[in-house]
Image (tube, rainbow, N blue to C red; front, top):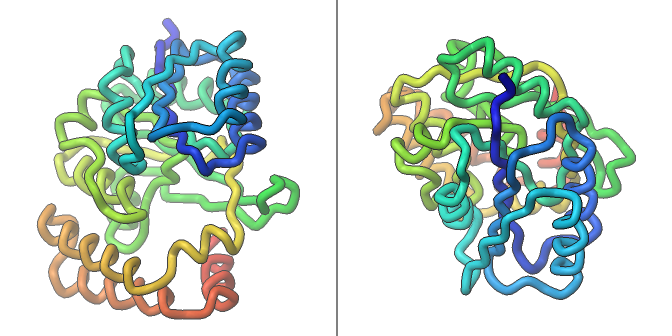
Length: 270
């Protein structure tokens, strides 16, 4: 029997109407289609985005949940999670592109591995027009590999994950952690003893490039890295010595010029 599932998306005013429409179009071309798309409007939304929503409501089971003001991605996703009516929830970002077999492959894996509560996949990163490939991000696939990898780097591509709603809520949902709400959440899921996995298949095409890299710089990001190190220690994912050493190694690139930092991320892609 096919698993019914929800797709959880947060949308805010400054997102590209073109990218958002491409995102919804990619979902429309998947098999099977989701039972529902929970679309959280994170504050007021401009007319262009509203026109796209109304257009695709004809073809997709979109349920809209507007928030009175912008609360940020993590809080918006927590609110949307309350309205997901299915046990399994699939994440999607408004500027990325699902491949047609994404849901089919993840559902098949979930059915064959009932102990897994969190499942991601590989991604291919492109320029803003989704024309020039910038490389693949292939996270580890097995639970033990993911546990080891999580000490150093984010072990999941957020826009690819499917997770069990009850587990995410049990560990406290998304929590405020600048640019790293997802990494924070995965650490708490793993620390709670749950089984997790990634598929090696590329199931989502993502937009990257220098604009994304610029957001990963500066002292504010280093502060977020320190919060991450403390979380790993608190959740017993890593030892204090290793966690703070990793903090230092991850923080140094945040001070580099964008051109050099871009090369660092290029080398990290597989």
